[in-house]
Image (cartoon, rainbow, N blue to C red; front, side, top):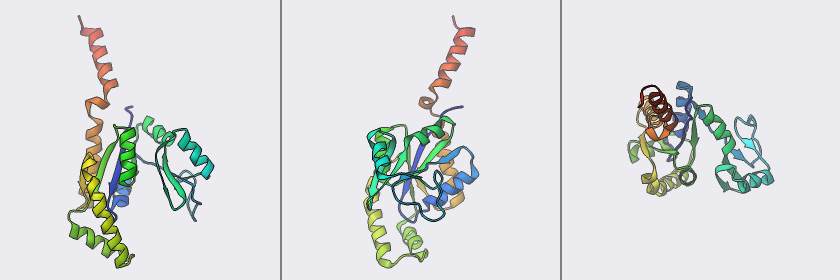
Length: 208
């Protein structure tokens, strides 16, 4: 069984990142969603190891010191990060590990693990992004404007991603996402063990 790959999905608020990831997990069994660690308290209904790995501040800072995190950040006095052990466990099982995180964390992972695949999800147009944010009906015009200002900032990092994925039609988008990852898994650089095995077998049987 070949080792899985790490794929980070980022995108503007309102582009449907969570929907795309949930649909991909539903349709294809070879994916696993990364579970983050956090120092915030569990909310009602959240489960250890499913929603998050809940850590004390001391435990989390110990993980930082021991280089046990793919990436981490601090928001409103709480740490959030991606445990390396869980990710490696899934990769060794042949699963493609999906991480849904923002640009800063994505680039942090890419720098540390260059083999990571970065995919940026975008709507087909600015007008569609505005329509989706407004259509949710859950945020004030001020918050929507802040999200769009944030999108303008995030757009300046899009060129650092490996792939740009347009979420126009959900079915098409999910299958394109799956195709990207399947294509990457076929790259020669990711199949060195298979190549070596084939070359060795041929050399032993037919080599001079």
